[in-house]
Length: 120
Image (cartoon, rainbow, N blue to C red; front, side, top):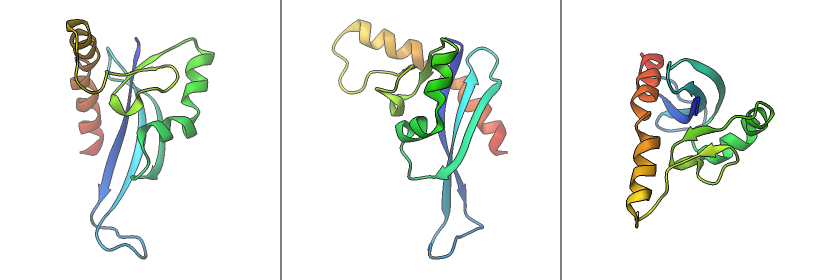
């Protein structure tokens, strides 16, 4: 797969919107190249309370992936989303399940590196 999908929270401790007590978080959805780490798509911001699957649906990214005949790898927050391949949740019963999850998760380091650079 060419892309990895990630929903990431950004916290703003120095800014508090009216009616909030502590800090405010927002979420962005990123579509990042699995080989290059290049950002291909950003959607957001949305409130930090949005679940990854909800963010995926409102961003219409599933339509874009379908139009381009693409699928992407995602974390467990995207389980069940159209065109997003995610690790299996829960107790893994077979060696195949473990290999499946390791294969998807081995790309996480590049994704986390890219997100870390953005947050600096």
